[in-house]
Amino acid sequence: MQRRRISSGSTFEATIGYSRAVVVPDAGGDWIFVSGTTGYDYSVMKLADGVVAQCETALANIAKALADAGSSLDDVVRVRYILPDGADFEAGKLSLEQLSSI
Image (cartoon, rainbow, N blue to C red; front, side, top):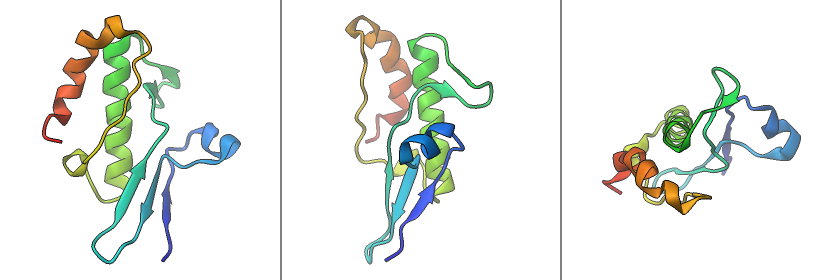
């Protein structure tokens, strides 16, 4: 059983030793694990401004990793996110509504 690593091209992957996603084959279907995804916008090489933009960028980064693995956000069964400032919850949850089918 050979696992496949999905890279975002982030320099942190080589420095710290992780992959944006890992695909693990299974007889019942592949398992795809996505981790360590932030609101960093790799197209401009900076952290997006504000909680909403960061949340949207993080979800776009996750969606790209899933697409590279042959999947999509429609197949997600669990999400764990960290919101450092609880006061940002209302603004941030608007971006998370696209995951409401989980």
